[in-house]
Length: 405
Image (cartoon, rainbow, N blue to C red; front, side, top):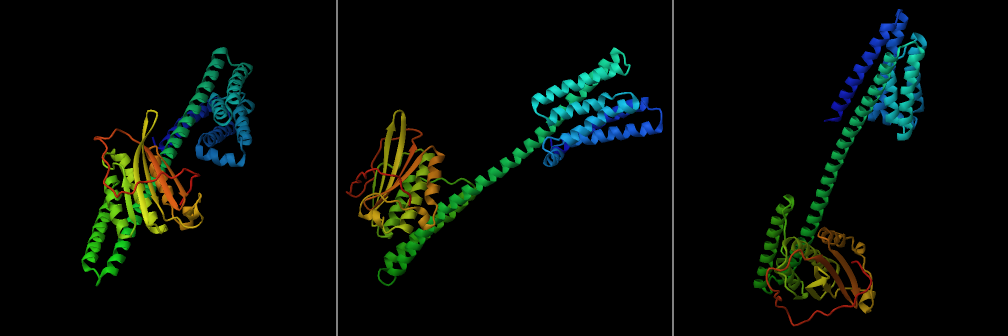
């Protein structure tokens, strides 16, 4: 139900009760002045009731007076005024007042006033000479109209709130999609463009000296460009998925072109696709940072399986010797990524968090180490097989305070 439809429904039903109130007062009006005054009183009460029950009007009134003391007091006076000039009360107007109290006031106070208004209607009916049946009818009318008014007002509030939540949910969904798109473009293009620039510069230096090698570098640069174009299409449609083994092989070629010796340890093949995609994106960002922000000559990539009770975790470690400054002389040193104007570590941490993982970085003895741990969602499909690497063995660096890059 749209909010406008709910408001229209409430307006029509309350208008029907107002017409009943006018008809009852017209019945006991004996002069044109009384008739005009009765119509004016019911019209004013209806306008105040709509202001008290409409969420938008209630919000504007609340800015002027926080708990509606003046408008509610005016409605109370108008609801009792027929007793003064007609010696007769209106159950519809009293019901409006009872409903307004339940809508505007705190729960305990509203319940007390709701009961007090109905008791007042009963006493007034008996004092003005109505019989017991008529008095009971007036109380029933007052209570029924008050409850219906309250229910209609709550209905309008609920519909309005639901539509507001729906709009917020749509906005959140759009914002999340923007963040995903931004992160994916950052991950893809930072890596791909860095690799293309690197290989193009290398090919430019090799032209005339080693044309065959230059041709190979240009061919690989073209392949990376085509892959980046394909990745853009998958990002647009939200279907991008990377394999960790492919990223390891691509990183080896890129780092080799940059003159960085890369060694690996572990089985990168039999990994659950969702986890493998996250680890591949983390590796891609780590290699991009290495190319852009360090002077590394060696890189070590290790994938290991750890067990914490019943929980199996995959631990991907990417280390390079490109740390400069105090950390190069030994001892921990924080190299904040903000110094480079980047946000890759935040993206990597967010990627790991998507599958319940964590990310840690540190700088020790001239090495920058990035460790990401993610749950192994299912056991490997085949026994682990170590990827052939150079004889260099990854040395376990002592743990220290967490550092950023």
